[in-house]
Amino acid sequence: MAPSPRSRRATNEPTSVWIDERSTLEAARSSGPEALTKLFAEKSQRLFGSIQLVTPTHVFPLSTLSVSKPGKQGVVLVGEAAHAFPPIGARGLNLGLRDVADSADALQGVDRTQPDWADEVSESYASLRAGDLARTGTMVDALFRSLLADMLPARGLRAGGLWALRLLPALRKQAFTIGMGNR
Image 1 (cartoon, rainbow, N blue to C red):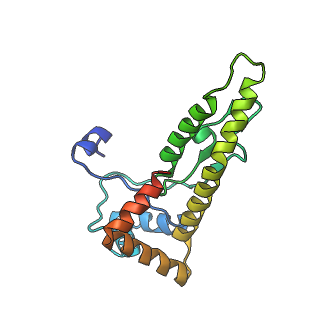
Image 2 (cartoon, helix red, strand yellow):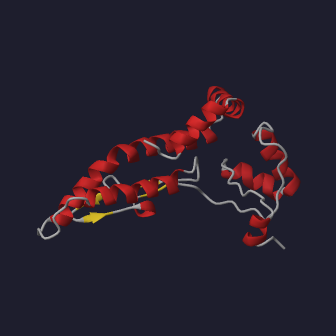
Image 3 (cartoon, rainbow, N blue to C red):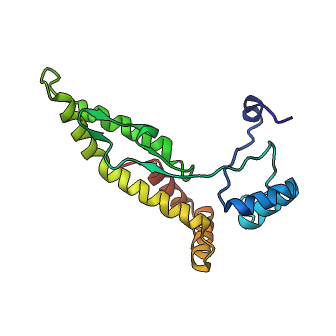
């Protein structure tokens, strides 16, 4: 029986999402937990130390979703109503929090006694969010594709980037700062 989420938190066991080709994951999973653990260790180049399966595993497809304009005709979309990304770089929550902050900014100073105030807010919000959504969508798409790329240059860049993040605390801090969306 798998531990409950509460007991997992109490023991500080991390939960991971592994991104790979479905056929690769299904083949390893059908060979048993040892094969899956071996696949993760080999593909991660053992950068993360020992890997253990502590709960049952599940394979499901990942995809992205993003609206072309998050505000229009008096309506604003925030969080996963506006965008949904695979869990890469903790982008979803951070992006949703920035959506909320920008929606609050768009509401500032708007005269809500005017009949078109909601249109004004939605257009302002869409303008405020455009750059961030484009940057984040491009970054997540590039990261997602790099995780699935079997080409040697992409694998080399990915491995080099992981080693650099591991060995250079200043670079790791900068990457997390960017990931948090600090402006």
